[in-house]
Image 1 (cartoon, rainbow, N blue to C red):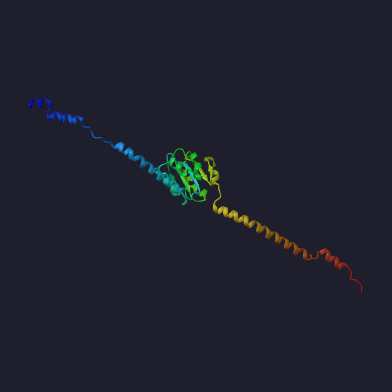
Image 2: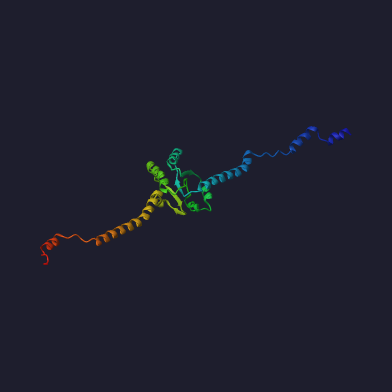
Length: 227
């Protein structure tokens, strides 16, 4: 009996080896695959945060202009920002983020010029020439003719690179007020001048002219009538 049992049952070591051989290896998830499942939601959240920041910049914005900033250093960007008026702000943003931020807004036309490396100028004032002049001066100083304005939207109208002369020559608020005040004052001045001239003419008509020298000599030569 013992011999038959020993012949039918394998030794203990053989059983252990078979169990080890048949055991399924544990499923190990690599760090890269695990990170791949987590990164897309994080990346999407970061993109949405950037787009939301751009939307906040559009609140109260009067003009939005793009500047081709290829090759700009961090020091140059800081120099441009330092020269801008308080009502203007320069941001470097991805074209995809800006396109998503302006979608469905009056600024959506600027997506046509969202190509290449751009910095975006947000102007929260109707003083347009003072906001554009600092970069134009910087461009001339560094001789960066290629790094020009790429496009802008102002009052719902799209301006191309060749149309910036119109924006830069716009009258400032002070100049507009002076012109308006002059237009309002001109009719009043004209009316007062006309009234004054009429009064002077009427006064001259009512006053008899003084006798001339010839008239005085004639009167002296005329004999007095006899009584």
